[in-house]
Length: 123
Image (cartoon, rainbow, N blue to C red; front, side):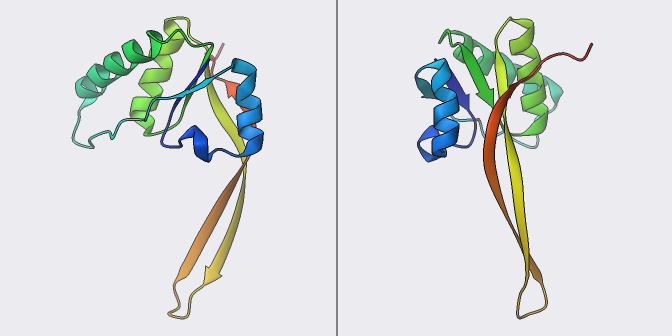
């Protein structure tokens, strides 16, 4: 089983991302939390404890995480320390910048999934 804890529901993933995820079995979506910008580090730690318990109770083969950086960092760290297999998506970013009639510019980014990569500690 692959747990998808991100703001990107698996039903919206590309066929190549779904195919890569199939190596882990069924995909179970756990929506990434709305992280309150007013939370301090202790508030983030408490939220990480809650999500780690929710994720670990599922007994997944891998956990895909993507989202708000401070929560993501602490959750990856907690899950790795608990022996979980945590992965991220590796994508090519295709950008196009367009000059709008009012003189402003608009940037469009398309992310093309390539593969999953394991999180690991720096040695």
